[in-house]
Length: 415
Ligand code: LLP
Image (cartoon, rainbow, N blue to C red):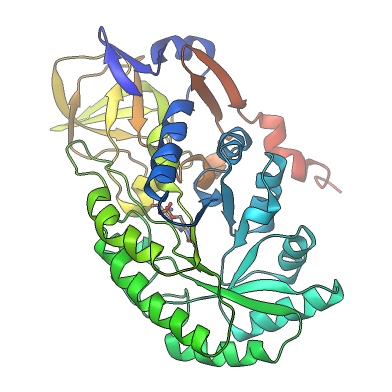
């Protein structure tokens, strides 16, 4: 949905250079169609399975984006009270919500239980005890799952692998046995399933196959112990090709090996896709402020920074840079932001089209873990988000104002 027409970069039928006349940079621009298409692809993939798609809200929690996703009937995987608040505000159905995380507070659990969410994925015995006691206050019996750690290598960046022994997430088969024995003695929780999440930006089907085989053993054991388990949550993780020429996720093998395995388990499969649905739906549009030359190096200094988009600074992630007006000549340059940290760059020694001060460029694949990880660091206001639908565009979040940036503090000044 992002491509050049007559040398102009378009998002759907909207020329991005035109948008820079209407909205000050930097801003995120989203294609609604990409999100819709991705949802359709996953619905199609999981059609042979009794599946519930629960979008991982952390990836992008803009209300209008959640509204598109909830409108397609997707549930939500949440990690906080705030994510549940957002998903429900956007029109989501609480009965399709699963709550993950190792450190859910009592306040958050109460909030979720009051709203009648579908499932809480538990991580520890004290957490299960807390849920049981809160559920008792409401005279309710709450469905819970145990998150297992399948100890499978997801072959991804070390900061985003979660399903390996030693990660803070999930428990071993041995611990499942202990936790299940404890749950048996509780009156206000019902063990209805198991959950896992292998990691993020996974490109192959094999880690899923291996982990699901392990989960199958746990499900079989639980059934044998008399637990009425009805669901397996396989988490998220399907990756996207950020780099031009990289292969996409191996859907073919997944369809051939993983889907029939899931269909054979006789339980509802909960899937928590995030990145796959939204990452490639957006570009971060920024303006070139200066070209700084230093010896051999060329620095393209732009008006967006690591506070607006953190993935490069945090994970050395690769994101493509495209000028809004195509240029045939290339140079090797570092695209750098205004933040006073050396990690504030979007490319390093990248061969890219030549750009000059005043030009606009797009950082691609920034719709997931983009705005949702942004901050006010260096006293910079949160930026705007624009949604494109065909030839039309609309603001889905306006930029923060300077006044708004200080609203939570101003009343305490000189107090
Ligand atoms: N479910 C659970 C329990 C998760 O922890 C995550 C992501 C997902 C689902 C969604 O995974 P996805 O389908 O998006 O891979 N900030 C990092 C990624 C952190 C992943 C956190 N968990 C990045 O920008 O690469």
